[in-house]
Amino acid sequence: MEKKELALKIIEALKNEYPDAACTLDYDDAWKLLVSVRLAAQCTDARVNVVVQDLYAKYPDVNALAAAEPEEIEEIVRPCGLGKSKARDISACMRILRDQYNGKVPTSFEELLSLPGVGRKSANLIMGDVFGKPAIVTDTHCIRLCNRMGLVDGIKEPKKVEMALWKIIPPEEGSDFCHRLVLHGREICTARTKPYCDRCCLQDLCNKNI
Image (cartoon, rainbow, N blue to C red):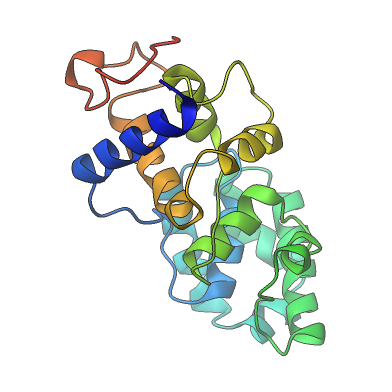
């Protein structure tokens, strides 16, 4: 089976298994997703969702967060780990939004990439979830599962995985597909234990490169 055909079959199976694909970071505004995705580096989404409640209670909008000193932000976000660098990036990012974009998150991939602390994964997440544009978010679940299933062959570098997936995943499916990989990677095709292949909706499709 060619990779493009395999990809379509996997997409359909995951749709049936996880019909409600969505980002697991809580947000009600684009700038909040920008903050949360930076905090989520080497931290669980569940912890981020708790920590940002205190952050937004004290700094409820872009201007308030931009006016805060990085040290003040760090005090709140420290439980997410890497507090100093994350606070520094969030501070710099919010000040750019305030000063250059009237407090709004830019809508182009290139502009997002130019923001402090924003890499391809974060930019794709925002493009897909906030702006409804084609996006492929190559997080650790995506990379692990795509290698196991045979959609990519021994590729571990996020950008290379992303480029390979663009060739076989329909653009309109990319964002939801990646969200479903996260759910599947947490519940079935796990990293820290042996995958639960006997309960996997993809067991007839997967190459099982474990």
